[in-house]
Amino acid sequence: MCTTCGCGQADLRLDGKAHAHSHGHGLGSDRGGRRRVSLEESLLAKNDALAAGNRRRFAERGILALNLVSSPGSGKTTLLEQTILRLQGRIPVSVIEGDQQTSQDADRIRATGAPALQINTGKGCHLDAHMVGHALDHLDPTEGSVLMIENVGNLVCPAAFDLGEAAKVVILSVTEGEDKPLKYPDMFAAAGLMLLTKVDLLPHLRFDVAQCLAHARRIRPDLQILRVSAQTGEGLEAWIGWIEARRAVAQKA
Amino acid sequence: MHELSLLEGMVQGLEEEARRQGFVRIHQVRLEVGRLSGAEPEALRFAFGPATEGTLAEGAELVLLEAPGTGLCRACGAEVEIGARFDPCPACGEGFVDVTGGTELRIKDIDVE
Ligand SMILES: Nc1nc2c(ncn2[C@@H]2O[C@H](COP(=O)(O)OP(=O)(O)OP(=O)(O)O)[C@@H](O)[C@H]2O)c(=O)[nH]1
Ligand SMILES: [Mg+2]
Ligand SMILES: [Zn+2]
Image 1 (tube, rainbow over the protein chains, first blue to last red):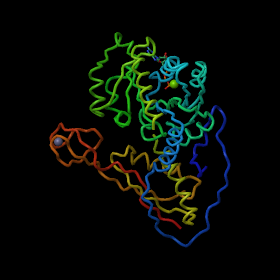
Image 2: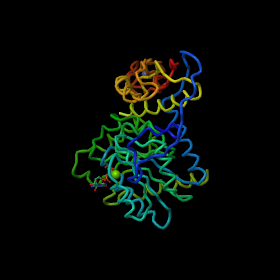
Image 3: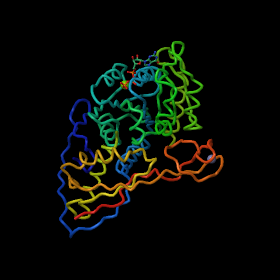
Image 4: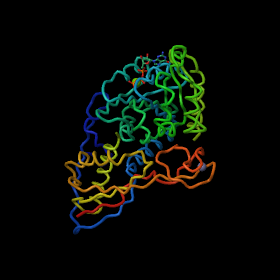
């Protein structure tokens, strides 16, 4: 286990290669007998410190980093493909893909021409700041670019782990039910933007959009929500506009 | 189920602490777990064994100091206890409750040698 950068994930893989780096560290000498050591330290302190490091790296290079979170299959990768196409030639985009297994999502992103790096978390149910830090070393996003981080599909755990992003974007597809904001409130509370996706399917479903939005706003009264379809392109202009506005802020900072 | 990775992160921090403070074994870990911290006491207890296996905390006792969730109602102003974030105010039944306590998830102290 690496205590320098915090990698306990033996089965973590970056673009298929096992993540390994050796640095010896012996235990310090025994300085006396049994005693109580007061720590008062958050369990997330380590992740938060690494996230702050990532955030500094983004700020230095004017990079807008977004952390895309949702349950599995809500349409994150499809949305990213469409987003990249629409930003092509104007704003460079690179992508970090987090999945437990396979490099399929990174392959799909590369097919659009954008650089992508796949992180396989193995049993891990979320990305953490340490994984993203290593991915940045490999991916090296260009100055002034947008970095999209597609988290592992999971509406619970990724909420707790700051990656250093400017904002979490929570994606909820209309096939998942309008009650999800109430069932997974931490994720919606942590989000800077909510995308209601696959709205092209609404005519086929009994999904109450107004109720879903009301649930989300009960958790976060000021949450901005955009309705989009990666299939028809509906609402994507507003999403692109949101990215451009946030990128302008990232570059000024 | 991120309790396991939280505890794995904790153990890494403890190993650093061991080198700084010169201890080689941990007998007990006391964790403060707020009701609104997002971590489940049961899951923490369950994951503690696997997370500490083969480390200086292997076999250590885990003591959980559980704290209630507390908040202030925007509507009636009452100081209330809540079981979950975003629960409506139990005093007036409708107000949005701003959380004031119970989100902590931290190591209070450890018993070492
Ligand atoms: N009708 C419709 N289908 C969509 C839309 N977006 C994605 N899909 C479909 O939803 C399925 C899942 O899409 P993905 O983009 O792979 O979803 P994901 O969130 O990246 O999935 P994971 O990474 O496995 O969590 C695919 O079959 C897509 O074709 C949409 O806007 N409308
Ligand atoms: Mg995907
Ligand atoms: Zn009240």
